[in-house]
Length: 207
Image (tube, rainbow, N blue to C red; front, side, top):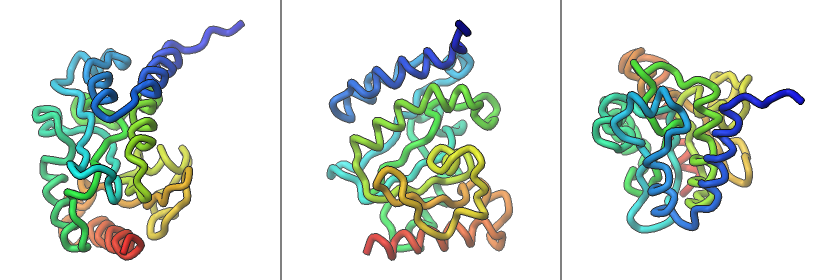
């Protein structure tokens, strides 16, 4: 019998622990000491579990790729430059971040902000899956390719799937650009315009 890769066992253990969490507080407490990804656990400052609205069920969920340096320092998602732009574009689209849950596919910062490796995504998936179940929001915005592929499959091409909602497990999933791409291409670049357009479409769908 072929022996399964070690990360499969780690992913299964995370999924088991996450699925057993009865509420958000229990899930967050279980996630914070996670060491399923040894490289990430050795270099992180915080497990960035995510932000949820104080008032209960979120109106929508924002899912990014992974924490950056500021997020790792503070333990909160989207609080650096990308987060500031995201807040601005949400407001321009008529959305309130305070009504959203803000999460990432991977909860620990990868060294030098590299793209998360597929084993890391697999190991962390149990946390995100259970978060989405507990939050039970009707709509999700997948920010960037890593998040889009988590929801829509590994061969997803962002340009082909953005601009419309996709039904995934009974939720409307909108795949769009990551705010970091909007920063990289500048205020007149296509990613910023596309991100604002998609957030505006989401706002209309929730009205």
